[in-house]
Image 1 (cartoon, one colour):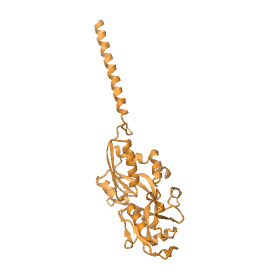
Image 2 (cartoon, helix red, strand yellow):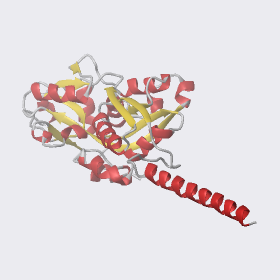
Image 3 (cartoon, helix red, strand yellow):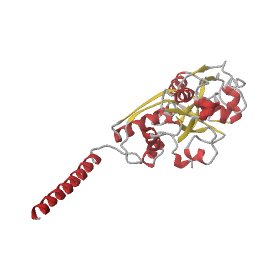
Image 4 (cartoon, helix red, strand yellow):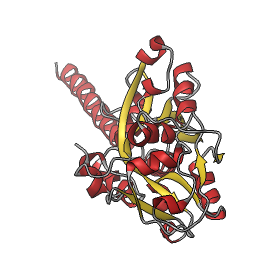
Length: 297
């Protein structure tokens, strides 16, 4: 009788020790530097994003911070324009299509467009930028329409000096151009036969800096860190491309920035998009010339 009790006690001790060891092992795994998603799973995988060059700097910064916090995730961000990003995510070539406009604006195939989800991650204002030799400080929407439609050809027609206007446009695939057409040009058609076309915000910046009398439109994220000293931004009907003027409705030239996914985002992709709109990243959003979602909701 004593021996049976002794054996039973021994087995009970083994079971208890096993439970303690398992608990210790679990604690060790949870504190080894790995991150967990909303359901407690560790975040891992590869995320590919392409599209808007206006959103690219912010997406790059978010990717670097997100990978630092989640070492088992790899994030690759490329440009190419909003139209390219939307078409690539629709075809399954990338996980995220970065865009300055809703995906429906760039998708002719209604069936494919219906499969896409537009995830708002920030706002962005766009500035009307001119070469430093242009003396005009403010333009009305009607004057901007006249310039880009080819009706106004000299700066003296809008209160400036006798200087030829050189228009720098964006290609049709550009989300920045679509935002410009929707908010500024409206029903007035851009004349693509005048001036030149540049395929990215960076190329526009270089072209404006090097071309006398030039004018274009540029994401304000490219005018931070002292760049406003080399590029001149004109106001529109007296309003400035600031968070305050966008939020109060006086500045018209802005849009949401979207991370478009095929279906609702899941796993690492959802975690990355959630990080983009989180309070933890909002300070960086503002610092880099974008508008946090909290300012627009």
